[in-house]
Image (cartoon, rainbow, N blue to C red; front, side, top):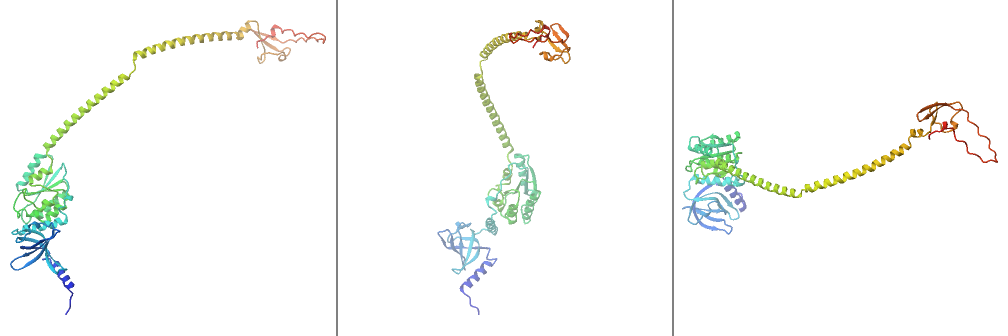
Length: 419
């Protein structure tokens, strides 16, 4: 026979209790007794009936903890655990409700706790709605008044929007899977900017399809934002908690997904008026600034009459200076004319001088050595040319050393030339 340690037995009991599927998801009805609340806020108590007691623990902030009190009969949901250090089996309670709550209510609260733990209700994942949707998808029954109410609201508030109905039953055993199929169909279509999941009011049993887990997960998985408009204002379903936005009624859901056209027209008119006033203000402001600039420019402009007088004075001064300069220039030109006239070769010729040139080559004769006896010459005088021939030059007489040397006789007039 095998012998086991206490730890081995305790571990076996823990594994057996916590591994049993039945004991992992329990609803228990019993009377609360021996209630003790720790400084941390955790509640320790027993649930009892006429034959047995069950040690129970409910941690702080669990739903329904405020109902716990000695002598109160509650319906509790939880799971069995085994605490090895004390060798005690405990019901770990995560939900407490008043006695008499039905099975559906208990199931609803249990599902809420589980989906909440998974984060399906997390506010941070909820998406904003499109401010001006073009297409609104509606998941509801076409037979009831809900769809007609939604149509009327959308037509009145925002006639530009297109309504796309995904028909489905909203009550009964087949409703939940068909609601899921309608949501998925609108997502596959991809045209809708927002989806309204709606039905009218009813009992918990009638609204139950919108508490089904498959519907909650379909809403959570939708790529298109979902607005829940299920029941009346006091009705809450899991679909409300998972949806991106919860409306108290189907008509309110229709009002939430589209803007009010009349309000938009008023806003546009207000914006237009504000724009007109702003334009007038800016125009007047610019006109004032331009007037001020014009006055500054006017003050900065020179006095034209004074400037005209200055121009006239400058013109007279310039005319006087120019006349003076012209007189000086004329005087200088006359002086140059006299000087040029004195140097004019024709005038020299007219005074009796002549120019002797070799007939061959027209070279001017300036020295006697340039001319050979008998060489043809041309003599230019004032009124024309004289052909000539060079004769023999007389030899000068020998001079006595006792006599003063005399100056040579002047050249004949025919040999004079102008240098």
